[in-house]
Amino acid sequence: MEYFLQTPAWASFQRSLGRTVHEESGPGWRFLAVEEKNPAGKVIYAPYGPVADSLEAFDEAVAALAAIAHRSRAVFVRMEPVTAGFEAADAGAILRERGLQPAPSNQQPELSWIVDLDGDFKDVLAGMKPTNRNLYRNIHKKGVTFRSSQDPEEISVLLNFLHMTAARNGFKPQSDDYLSSVARSLMPAGAGTLFIAELEGEPIAAALAYDSADTRTYAHAALDDTHRKLSAGIPLLVTLMADAKDKGLKHVDLWGVAPEDEPDHKWAGFTAFKKSFGGREIAYPGTWDLPVNKLRYGAYQVARKLREKLR
Image (cartoon, rainbow, N blue to C red; front, side, top):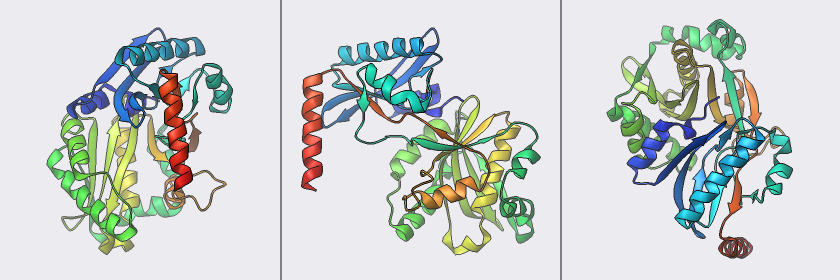
């Protein structure tokens, strides 16, 4: 799988926000890393990276990241090595041996849900719950249609639904400015697509997806609660998958899910929804820090733990 946060399209988007992006590669490894600000100071962050096909290649990538951090006077490197020549279960010992330590929290999900698009799309449908298949096949009888768009102006459809969902459920979505910037950067380039469900020509649900060379990532979605009984979000997601299959993509990444043994997790509801489409869970090593300025990183950790105690 090619992770979208390690693609040239994501690098272009980050640069459009005025951020400094580092892209380097070598035999069997590559990474995209972004300069960020943190209470400790400057951080070099590789989201779902570096990408490496062996442990030796991973070591070379980490050395290159550390060199960038030294040149940039960053305090530490933050990374999420999803493909690095070792299994997630073995990551703790391997990464600690190399001087890394777990970050205070994961920046990207440690568990994700993947739907593979191998074979005929009817095989993908067969892996879903019957309710999902039936809605996809029959919702047109209720006047619901689906379309896709790469016009960044149409991101307003999704933004309106996100505002409704936020007001209803009390969560804070990413800002309109941020998602509008995403749309302006990715949609005209073909790396982002908005899928819209309409009832008699009026939008009732929308979902934004990002594409890498082989994977479509289900990034943001929301619907009009007035039409909740239609469950348009389900066939909308199946439509997104069918379109990915038509484009020759191999996987759909439904993004973060909750651990199975945590039924009260804040993502439990989303997780049940995502798993109803069939697929498999994938576990990542999580987010890890490589201190470069060890004195400042140590002070940052002490200050962070003190703040947590005072809460």
